[in-house]
Length: 549
Image (cartoon, rainbow, N blue to C red; front, side):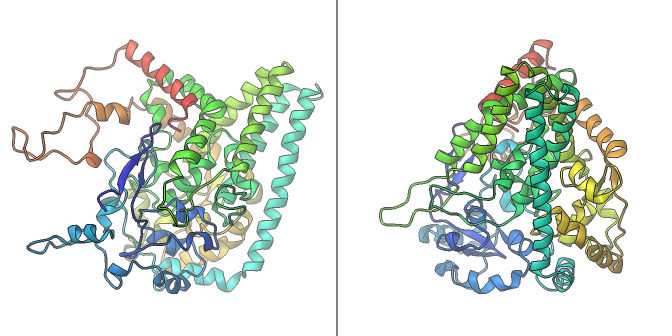
């Protein structure tokens, strides 16, 4: 498996797997290539997780995960059948087990993609998946998650939850109609600009919340490997200019939810790019960056995903390995966003469009991080409320490290005004549920389970009075943070293979690069005004290229 990391994106630096496909579940290695097309939830989830440990996903994203064991048994890599693949292997005298597996072209946990196959700017520079993925308790039996899941299954049938999903979708269509009508009335000069701005902010925020839940739903690929049409609602995650369905499927659903609060949680560093800028330049710089992302950046990023990141050669005669294909739902939403801009520009309403863009984009930026305490790099305060026996329980952590949000005090209305984050704790502990209405209906069951194990159910946090001021202070006033690429450039060159540095210490491996300490010996002096301005223009331009978020 020495060639596992050998493909790198020329645009974003994303490393992708090559060689024999593998997935690791509970310490065992599987080749699920033949199962991808049959996966009831759709092929995208397995296609995007090749080369990873997907144990957390198997146990937390299925209503009845125990039933999957028989399916997995059919795809275990035969050379490792019955063996547990561990990250630390004991080396026999002549040939290490890792070298032996390499000769057999079978994986070990050391072959896990260090950066999980996502753009490196989404993760901390020092993150290394084989050692840093959290090990928590999400067993199918005996865990707190299993207890909650059993209670939900006893209380709600699949059909009952689908009724809530259908009602949620009906409201989504009504909001979408209001969104389109507001644009039409503005263009016809039948609505004042201020009313248009208000309606756009509310409908975009609400529709992105709907897209958030559609992103979690299962869907089947249709039309072969080159064409896919998932629910159109999935792409609504893009409508607020912030959440992007391109990385949402992976970064949000597959990484943030199962690995909340850890180094693999891309949401912790999702908006850290703006921290490269001086606080004075942060608002205009991030605004221009996001404008570039909306106009040209995301289309360029989608092109790269389609033609590079989600395609790979396969031996003649083999069935092509299914990855993401052309995404019509994504391009439909992109066309609508550009059409809105073009229509407002052509009819003289560009200032109204820019105003709704600015307010929507900033409000939703802060909404994305308001549902967790990412301002505090330590999660000790949140974990302290968990009873000692449950400190390493996955479900307990999900509940205690997430916030429900309140806007007007009515949970069913707050669901839309908070971009779907009103029942956020239930959503995190039951991420497989398909709508905010299903989460609100399930909340009483989850609260009852929490009360029985001693987990206090805190009141929802006020979005306006509590969370927005906290996240605004953090992102708009915190000190400048060195960019990841600049940090790499400032690292001293590694000595030739087989040689040690003069002081006898060993250099850190490439995936353990640490950002330089500001003003430490050997680092450049403090940035000048010219440096800050240069960083401002570079960051803004990166948005138009599709680099960063």
